[in-house]
Image (cartoon, rainbow, N blue to C red; front, side, top):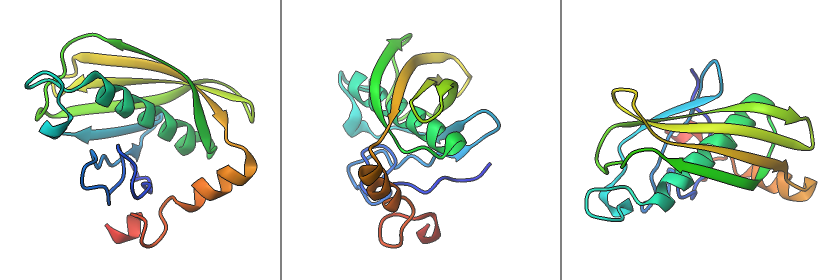
Length: 155
């Protein structure tokens, strides 16, 4: 597996965002995977990860799956999340995502999961991602892995 170059200040993967999750996504044979332990400041009810944080985590994982496997810079068009069990903060989690369908250059459909350390499904999502307009795509691509922006070389 290879670690993907994060965006510096992203809420989920930004390595320079002290209030973020600082997740490191890696390519795997199907898409992307990451291990994390969500910090307590992402909780909703005491001891439980807020649903919005879970949603952000799944959205980011699916975005990275599209980028890692198709090299496409996209924007989320639709996102459906299903919460299967309470997600504790401070617990070891695994998030995975993969592309499940595509119309190259037009639409990518991805699925993601949040699992506990034993592999139990806690949340799952499906998203649709549209290619970013060319100018915006170039700007966003330029923010990935650049010196001073949280590149893998700085790690």
